[in-house]
Image (cartoon, rainbow over all chains, first blue to last red; front, top):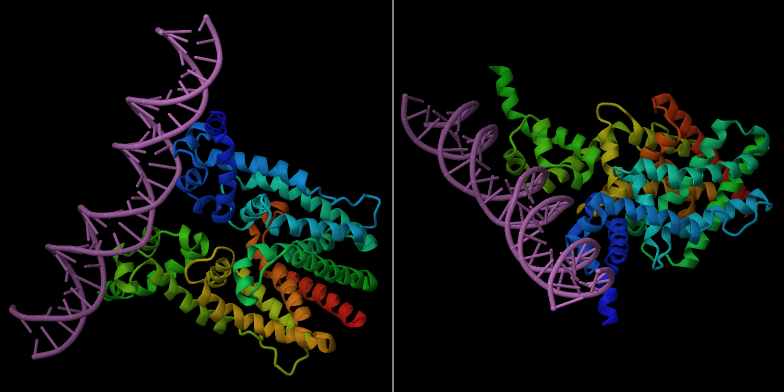
Length: 212
Length: 212
DNA sequence: GTACAAATCAAACGTTTGTTTAACTCCTTT
DNA sequence: AAAGGAGTTAAACAAACGTTTGATTTGTAC
């Protein structure tokens, strides 16, 4: 039977998907290999067979996430480099929020990597170098243009963190946000949020330039 | 012997302290009762005897943290209610950063509660209602005054989150921050940070008022 | 000093964790 | 059709977890 043949031979792919979902929801420590195998409709021992163990699966899932993230949310969000820095800042923030909060079928890629920031696992260093630092450098470039003359590295750094902090808040503190303000996050709400953070940050930046 | 007498009768206090330190570092799930008992130089069964179990100890530790936090960092940071909203915002942000990042002997109180935000335990609801919502309401009051006329609840809410996000970033994402920007956080650095976040947010708020 | 409740202790309990084992099934090769 | 490797499976494994037990020690009241 073709379907049976298929089912038996893509166990690796099903484990990657199930692993991503469970790791994103429960973190590396909180996730259990039994839960992952069950969700993938695979045998418990398949994880050790295909990936060498829990940590091997986690690494493979991250590896795949890097690629998917780059493909699904290009860092410039479709806005050309020639666009003004303000427009590129808006695109960056929107892309980042969608990446982290999108409820789509592949939504766990962003959640997975952001979770590493607050709850580090043994592979945090790779996540920072491969996923976080490129994002950071791009944002630092935009901020540097916006600050223009008074762009000493300290000012750029503090501003970058203020912007990243606003974005990450909605993911890292989601359990509290949903308790303080009950309500769902759909795509429209996310874009509203991106607009607020962009406007808020641009006003702060313009003020700095004005008084610098 | 007086010291022996003392040692045997403050097991409860030693467990509270050791529990706070370990819970703050490893989280509720990550912490183990064996590690806590060892650090407290107490027997493993003492936790169940004095607090009913791991969760009971965690609740008691939080209860104590609420009191310590209120005493050590009064929410107005010594600034009278009659002071202008800008000065009160500065005091609020400074107090919050010191509370979360202070490296003193009692520093784990803040870390403990902030950890709940990103990595919820079974008692998150109580933490939100007793510790987070009062902080939030106070900040919302200050922001409401600053926004004045255009203070519709949506604008206040988004602004409050932008400010909280900037503050929480330095704790929730500390493992990444320290990798992107190696260097230590001493008290002077923290006040520098508080000054930046305050100025950044006030510029954003003034801009909003100006264009409202 | 004897009795009694509170507190401490070493040991064991029952789960759950990630991992390993050995038998088994399926598909390809010859 | 026989052989052999790749993949799957149920079962068992050792370690770590929170909790419980029953004996023992300690401080206090009589």
